[in-house]
Structure formats: structure tokens, C-alpha cells
Amino acid sequence: MDKQEFYQRLAEILDVEEVKPENVLKDFDGWDSLAILSLLAMADAKYGVSVKAEEIRAVVTAEDLARLIEAKRK
Amino acid sequence: MKCTFKHKRISSIIAVAPSQEYRFDDEYANFKMTEAQARRFKKMMSLDRHRIAPPDVCASDLCLFGVHRLLEAGVLKKEEISAIVFISQTPDYILPPTSNVIHGKLGLGHDVICLDINQGCAGFLVGLQQAFMLLEIPAVTKVLLLTGDTGSKQMTRENRINYPINGDAGAATVIERCSEEKTIYMDIKNDGSRYKALMIPGGGYRMPSSVETLKLREVEEGVVKCLEHVDMDGAAIFNFTMDDIPPQIEEVLSFSGETRDSIQYFFLHQPNPFIVTQMTQKMKIPQEKVPNNVVSLYGNCSSTTIPLNIALNAAELMLAGTRRVCLSGFGVGLTWVSAVMDLGPLDFCKLVDYEPTGSHA
Image 1 (tube, one colour):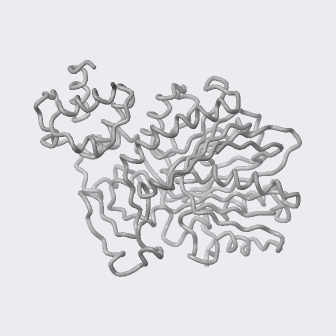
Image 2 (spheres, chains in turn brown, orange):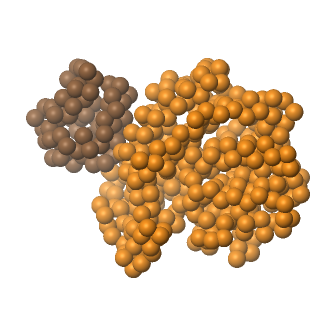
Image 3 (cartoon, chains in turn orange, red):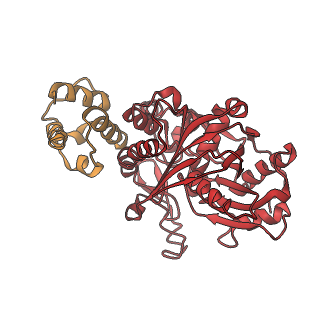
């Protein structure tokens, strides 16, 4: 998985310029149920994995999120 | 569970929407959305407007209005109605069944089967299956399948999750026998272990109506509801639509010997345009085969999205000839049903606005 591309997609969902791996997801203004829905869709459409909302809510940073999706791809 | 039916067809469809139309741009302040949030939400969900029934109009009124138009048009005669199947989550009363109330209002004879089914977004397909089974009874001539919901009565207008996408509507569909074999292929699946993903917890007999169940609370920003209002786990429903529906559609296509190329139309239930797009992209179905404008123009009207979709987007085609179509409904239960069948030529296919007659009670 191309991490840079993943953070760019995440930035689009959160409506910000850039997302860094260490950024805490909850700190973004755009981190809401719509963002989570967009993430579920992105995980399915771009990475072919089914992620549950609880799994997304359980992660803290953008990097944790990338790891979650990567782990599911294996 | 797979099943097939032969010598049966849909002959008429009428969808009925309340005339009261509301625009998202005029409503988003009720959901405590900022302009920026509203813009983002509107874009992602392709929201524009929806139809909401006035307080004194029930689902059965919308359905009955449609039945009268069919009778006036001469495509249905009262004496041909052998069964009324009413599919709704917003019946007139807890008892009697609304199908009986409709039977009485139509002034039908006693040799009629009346059946209420508590179903939601899979309701049109569940109702079709019932209609096909009823037509196995030799004495049954035509089945009147009535789907309708006034979901707006199961939520407040201050609910950003459910209200902006909700639409109220009803439909009447006539199913009858035909001389051609025309095999219909269906697959029906249920998973009751996930029933909590979409429910109204209070007001039944597990949690009877009380002052407590009627107490309104702001459960999260922009979501005011009580225990007698609809409660949806949006993410769980999204997972359901992406994980369970595409495999079923692929299964029913192969069961019927069809492919996504040989099917001319996919009339799918429309929870919101976003889900329909995601689902069909996943299945690599060309978007032009999947009309997806019902929620943007009318709202998610539960079991009526499929007949309304057909009447809104394909009436002329369906009156003129036959199309090989795939239908799929999925939702509350959880229940999901998909079918491949020939549709058309229909005797009647129209979408109309409801006009009150002043005789609801």
C-alpha cells in the first residue's frame, strides 16, 4: 500500500491540505460520522477490505489507521 | 434461499408521492449543520429535495390513491383483486391489519386474502415473492401489492442522520399470470442476528410506550429523537450493503444465466445515492444501467423506492416493451432479496402526486 497516497486520500476526506502519520484523528474538525463513512467506502473501493466503524473509532493516529487497513489486506 | 416462478408478470405500477416538497438547503439549519458541513453532506449524499406527507396522511392513503387511479384507468377491476398484500412499517393501526382497512374502503367481496407484512427496504421484493406464491392458488386472479411508508413520522425534523434522506411515498403494483413461461429467478436471505442495526426500540410490547419512551433527547449533535423513533447504525448498514448485497446480485445473475452485460436495468433499492454508487462500482456495473436519482428528488421511501424508480425513470420503456432487469432490495431485518426477471410491456406505469380526498378516517 502506498502510504503517501493513503494520507492524501485521508486529507481529502478530512478536507485539509495534509495529514501526517502522527496526527491524531480526533483532532481534525472534519472527523465525524460522515468522515468515517467515507473511510469505510475508501477502504472497500481502493483497498478491497471491509472495515468496521468500531475498528476505525478504536485507532488514534493516521498511522494506526493505515496499519489497520494494511493488516486487513494480508 | 433460491427460488423460481413461472407464468407470472407485473402488469401495472403506480407510485404516489405527497405533493409537499422540502429542500435540503432550507432545512439544514434544523440539523445544527454549519454551512460548510451542509455543503459537504449535500455533495457526498447528492441531496436536493424530498417529499414529506402531512400529519394526517398515512401510507395506506397514498397506496389507496394509486389503486383508484388504476381502477379509473381500467387496467384493474375490483372483482379481479384476489389478494391485498400491504407492506409497511407505518400501518394505520396496531390492529386490525391495514390491508383489511383498505379492503373495506375499496368495498371488495369476502373472497379476498388480506395480508400485512412488516418490512422495509427489501419490502418490494418480499411482496413480489408473496404475490408469486399467492398466484399458485388457482382461485387467485390478481394480487395487489401495496408498498408504502411515511417514515417521517418515525423521526424528528431535527435529525441530521435520518431526516434529510427520508421520503414518504406509496405504490400499487399489480401481479398476475401470463401464458409465457418467463422464469423469474429470486434469492432471499435474512440475518436476524443483526436486527439492532436498524430498529425502533420503544412503543412495541418489549418496551411499551410510556412517558420515558416518548422523551426527546439530543443523542448527538443535530440528532433529536426518542425511543419510539428510528435508530440506525449507519456504519453497520453501510458494511451490510457492501459485504452482502454484491455477492447476492452476482449469485442471482449466475443462477439466471445472465451477466451484468445482458441485464438492461438494475433497479436497486436506494438508501442514498452514495451507497448505490459504491455498491455498483464494486460490481463494475455501468452507472447508466442503474438509475440513482430517487433519494435526490423524492427521498428514501423504503419499500417504494423500486416501483417509484421504475415509474420515474423508465415508464415509457416499460409501457413499450420488455426489458431484462435485476431488482434488489435490502435493509431492516436484516433482509436482502434480489431477482432477475422480464419487466414489461406494462399496462400502466406512472408516478403521480397525491391529492387529498378528505375522507381518510
